[in-house]
Length: 279
Image (cartoon, rainbow, N blue to C red; front, top):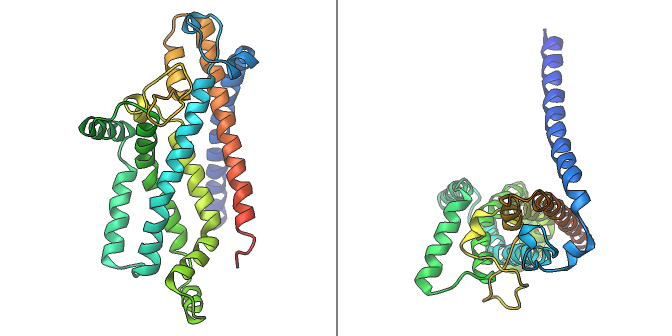
């Protein structure tokens, strides 16, 4: 009987994995099939011309750089708040204290809030302070979107750190600040995974930047200027009745996928560099 149950669940596991892999391959095939023929050097290196969305010449370098600026700035801004919060919850408070549990529950709720709500909230704050749609506004809104992901992902890894390691570090005469630096080294693989999840959520989201970052055919030269993004570029191109422009949307999606892969591999590489002394 146990053997039969084991075989049934093994079959279901293989079936689920195959379905997920099949969907992934189908998505990649669709993007490559329609996007690769439209992908050109001009599209990667030039800004849109006057009739770009009607099928004329031009490119989307403004959206490529805009997306990179937005996600890099948002991740750095979010990490500046996420890591101290996780360190405080786990290594200053008791891991199972009332305040720590309330904090985790609050971030779990924020995790499930739709991205359009973050976009609307960020837009409301910008109106209150008189801030126009800009690169800075997009960074702040995306940072709010991905911060619960970073905090809860890093927190789950931090909870696995044995208390003996913390106590051993303090017993050697280290201050709490020095102890936290040691813990960050230990948590670097978990931080890397959290960053990858955050990048995947933030760089492909259009709702948070629609009203906060705006859209521009030019490359932003400062934080106060509006910035284009690849998700919005894909959205606008797919809305065109011209087939060539629709195919360019798939080429833009291919570029977005490549950017995510580059950022992912870069994060993995630097994580290994920074975690050489991990005990």
